[in-house]
Amino acid sequence: MIKKLVFLCLMFSLISDCSFHNKHYRNPGYYKIGNSYTINGITYHPKSYSEYEEVGVASWYGTEEHGKPTANGEIFDRHLITAAHKTLPLPCFVFVTNIKNGKKLIVRVNDRGPFFEDRIIDLSEEAARILGFYEDGLTRVKIQYLREKSEQLVKKNPHYKNQYERAIQARHPKKITAESKGYIAFFQDIDAAKSTASKLRNQGVKNVRLLFKNSQYYIKVCL
Image (cartoon, rainbow, N blue to C red; front, side, top):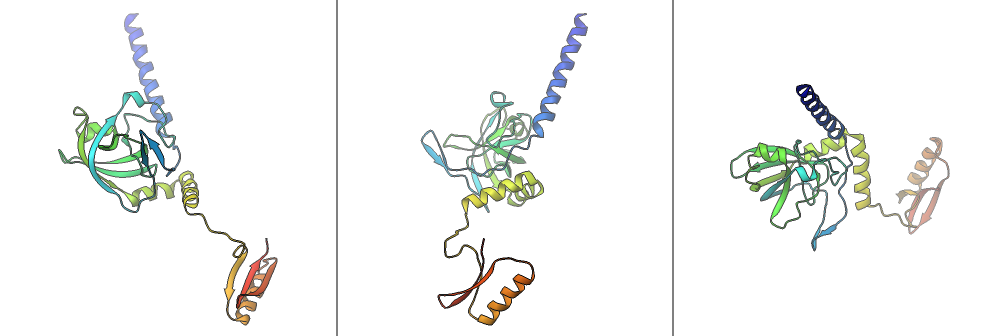
């Protein structure tokens, strides 16, 4: 009877563990750059990078955060190869090299941290094991932002792509003024302006107007 209870407990544990992985590994979270934020008196400025490379100290985190949401809404799993960074877009990929032993690993960044001045990245427990510094707790690493691989991740996932476009638009809004709103073309030559306006009308564009202002001809579509 006791053996049967032990067996059932082990099976329940395995099923629960598998359920956790299946549920949370597939949780896509969301794409974010994020606004500037202040932790312990230090202000960090997340942004979109074309290149990023840094050398410094890496730490790792595991049990205490296991099962909790990351900064981009994914669920942290200490058994997966992930990391936290203070300013890189989420999610993205970085190439991490353990300078001490030469081991290398591509890691998915999906969280914010570590919030210590002397540390540049916080790796998951599994990533720390693979890179060979789990027992030491800290090591010196080189991290390189993998821009192309990160952009592919965004482009192939419509969920991330829409959020990426909104994030970029929020940071670089189009300037719309009373002078420019509705204007779609400017011409010095009246014949070219008339021809373009006529083509637009023939294509079914409504409310096309031809105006003259500041020595230029304007085509405007009234909204």
